[in-house]
Length: 342
Image (cartoon, rainbow, N blue to C red; front, side, top):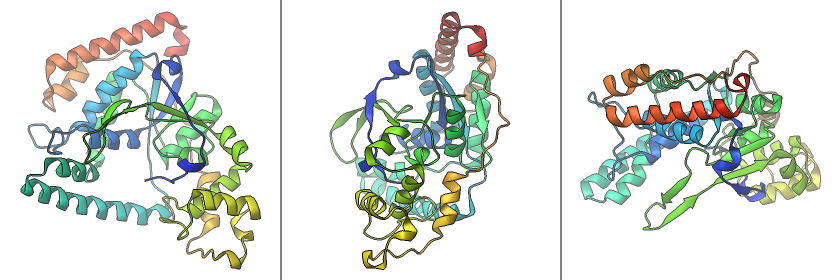
């Protein structure tokens, strides 16, 4: 879901080529949900193995990650841990939304409306613990590192970027800026042409870069004030925020009064949530320093075991993808010092 700050965050389009040689901390759960939503059959049915288990996320991990490495990018995926208690309501509502979407998907299939069915199917995507575990196993077999966050993956990715262990963090959500990532990249794993829902229109999806410094300077605010703006708009910890307050109005209020607590009653701002507790989640997030980022050579046999033997992927296509991955890593190693890759 994420906080809706697009109206006040300056962004610039870049290409994957611009990221050559860069280490990027990718929000794993965000990417896996993207793969689940996008990699589907015309009627919205996701890819499945012979047991009826969804495998769209594994397809996305293999082929999209290979594409990134071929561009000279060094990805490291960051997985969510235990969510903050305030997020439980959001998680519950997301579950309800998925159940409703599933019902609408089934209705659309009965009506024979495949376009409508696909749209609802995307919203019905669900990621299970087993799917997450298999994703980690596949990344290990591919030689791609991942980090297990103690709590929010975006917070951990932002921390890694702040430390300089990665160049930027990648996610579709603007929350990464609230966690003080120096640079946020959007659309990293979904670049290319995409069809607009319910329209026969295709658009080019490009990588977007946003920086924390530019966001703060353009709006004349501090990080703490950016967090307050997000709280007014609504975050994963206070869904909906303050009624009738969007990013532009929230910006005006914080620019005028400095912080949420100083907004006078005449502005009609009623808080039904613990603002200070939400601030702490963003400004003092739970992260770990206990992680190692090392890329390695792909283990072709392990990748084949996971994808072909266990999940019925085409052996020919998987072998070609792994060969591409091996060649891309070898080329990158040749262009950099060994210590910078492994």
